[in-house]
Image 1 (cartoon, rainbow, N blue to C red):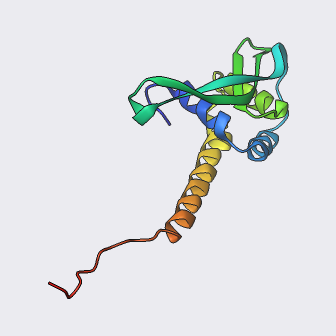
Image 2: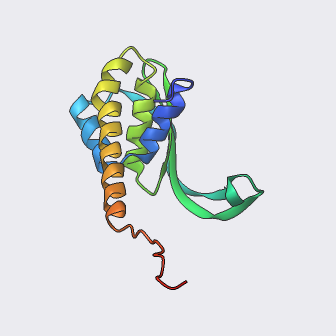
Length: 147
């Protein structure tokens, strides 16, 4: 994870994690802690921007659907989440993890949820890369015998 800003790293991981995988890991952690909603999960859109060649001027690529929410644990920690798509349960679980990572349970939660998610996502990324590499075509020019 990002050493400079660990919260940014776990928020990014939670936003990118597969919905079912995150929900399974949160179920394995145990019962949900008590919390109150600061912002119920709501679906909306955000404009996605890009840069030509990574350094040029910004331009709008299009819109993306996101779900966001915010909650507060009974102990006072606030968790936020913004996830791609329309999964309100994924947003809720991501916000719960964010809030719980600010408690003394952070180390156990990292070991039970974040580290396995990171491992699964890396394996999935490697499998996609291997599948793409298998279709790679190397072009080369042979020297013709004509002078």
